[in-house]
Length: 467
Picture 1: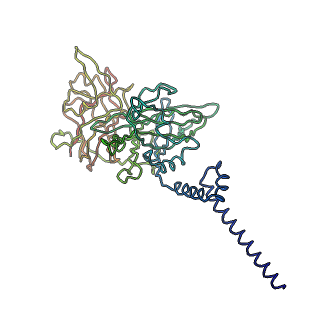
Picture 2: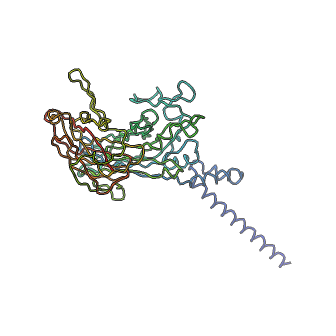
Picture 3: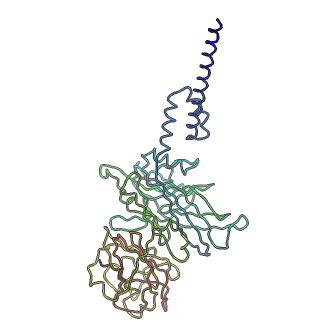
C-alpha cells in the first residue's frame, strides 16, 4: 500500500514538473514574439497565442518579415552656409521600394518610421485629377509649392530614411540660449531621353518634423532649427511616380528611377538602387574635397585622384567621344544687344561654336557652380579640352570672368583639380589624363576665377573630350 501511494506521489510530482517546464517554455517563446511586436500589442498577443493558433501563425509571420534585409545605405557630406558655419549632413536611405512590395516597405518603415503612418500614394499630399489615375499636388498644402507634382500614378516607388545634421564649426556651438538654423536641399536629377534636368513633376518628398509634416516637389528641402550641435535624426520619405499599363508593362517612369540621382551641392551625387535588382545595387557618390570638407572620414570617401598634365594642342587631333547633352546648376538670363538676343545655356558648350558660351547665373563669381556634359552610354576619355571664357572676341573675353581653378569629375568616382589659363586664346586648353576613364559624364566645378573687368559672370565656351 505504501509503495502504491509513493508511486502515485512520484507520478504526480513528475507531471507537475512537466507542466511547469512546458509553461516556462511557452512563456519564453511568447517573450521572443513580444520583442518583434509593438509594446501596445504585447499583452494582446500573449493572450491570443494561448487561445488561438491563428494568432500564433500571424505573429510568426511578423517575425519573418522583420528579418528582411532591406539594405539601407548611409551618405555623408559637408557644406558651409552663408555665415561660414560648417555642417555635416548624414542621409540614411533604403533602396527604392514599390508600394506593392508591402512586406519590404513594412520592414523598411519599421526601422525609421517611428509611430508615423507608412508612406502610400494616398498620404503624400496628392489628389486625383482629371481621372482616377492622374495625381497632382494637393491644394491643401500648408504652404505654397513653387513646383508641381503631376503624373499618372498606379503605384509609387518609395525610399525611406533619416537625415541628421551636425554643426562641426570649429569654436562655434549652438545651445538653447544661442540657437542656430540653416537650410539645404538634395535635388532629384532625372537623366532620361538625353535630358538632364531637375525633376519637378514625378518626384515628391515628405519631411516628418517633431511637430509637423512638410512636402516638397523635386527635392529634399530640410531646414533644421538647432538648439544643440546635433539635430535629428528626422524621418524622410522620397516618393517617385510609377504607372503600369498595357502600354508600359515595365513602368512608364522606370528609367527615371534607374538613371536619376540626388545631388547635394556641386560635388555630391547619390544613386539610389532599386530593391532586389542586382543591376541597381551600385551606389555612386562623389564626395567634395574642397578645403572646407577635407575632414570627411576616409571610409566615406570614394573620390579618386587622377593626375593630369597640360598640352597645348587642339582636341581635334583626336577622335572625340559623343557627349550629347549638358546641364548646369545655374544659368545667366538671356541678354539683348543691338536687337539680338543672346542665351547662355549649358548646351552651348557642346555646340562646336566658340562664339557661344555657358555663363553661370549665381550671385558673385560663381564659385561652386557646376556644368556637366553627359552621354547615353559610357565613353572612353583620355583627354578633356576647354575653351575658357567667352571666346567671341578679345574685348568681351576680358570683360567677363574666366575659370581659374576647377575640379573635373567623372561617373566612375574619379576627379582631379586643375588650374586653367586666363589669357585669351583661340585654341582650347587640353588636359591629358594619365589614365583614361570610362564615363557617362564630365563635370566641371568652379573653384576660383579670373575676375572680369566689367562683369561678375563666369563663362565657358566649349567642353570636349577625346579618347
